[in-house]
Length: 305
Image (cartoon, rainbow, N blue to C red; front, side):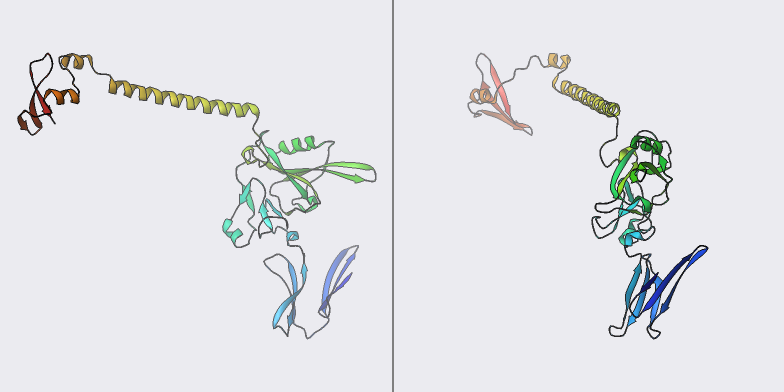
C-alpha cells in the first residue's frame, strides 16, 4: 500500500508473514518537512510554505480526535454530539478528576466516581446508546449467554466490573449472543450519532442518573423515619409553647388572694368621677392626685400617671 501527498512525500507499508514495516521518503528534497506527535496525541506531517512563511499540516493520523488512545482519560465519553466546545464529557455518575486540567483542554486526567461502589444488589446501570464496543479498553472476553439479564448479574457478581454490554450480532450460523464485561478504568468510549451498541455503566445507588434505584421497602422506611421525626419535633415544640403560655397567663392563688380587695375601674369612669380631673390634690414624681366621688362610695382619690 502506498499513500502520496502531492510533492511532499510518499509512505509505504508492507506486511510479511514474519513481520511488517513502514517507511516514507521525500519527493522534493528541497522542501522543508518534518513529522511530529504533539499534545493532541495525533501524528502530524507539516511542510514549510514559502508564500505564507508558515508550517502547513498536510497529514494527520488518526484523523478523528476521538480515536486517539486515552484522549479523554478514564470514565469519559468522546463524541461530536457532546454539549459544549469539548469533545470529552464525564460518564453519568462521574466528575472531573482535575477540573483545572479540563479548563486547559487537557482531559488526560479523566473522571472519577462521585460516590464509591457498594458492590451489592443495590448497584444499578446507566444505559449509553450508540457506543463503539470494539474500541473500549481494556478489552473484554466475550461470554456466551442467552439473555441480557444473566449478563447484568455476571457484572454485579464482580466488584471490579465497571460496565457490560449484551451484543447480538448475526453470523452465517445464526444469531450470536455475547456478554461483554469490562473491569477497572474504562478508556476510549466513543459515542456515534446513530450507530453502535448499548453500553451499561455500573453506578452506585445514589449515582443513578436514570431514576431512583431504591427498593420500595427502603423508600417507605425513609419516609416513615422522616415523618416520625417531624411529628416528635412538632409535639415537643407544642408542649414547650403551651407551658410558657400557661406560666405567663395563669396567676398564682396567693397573688389573687393578696389583691382580692382591689377593684378595677375604667379610665372613662375615673374621668367622670373626678369631673375631668379638675380637683387636683397634689402631685409627685409618679403623677398627679385628683379628688373624685364614685356612686355608692365615699371620697376617692385618683392618681393620673
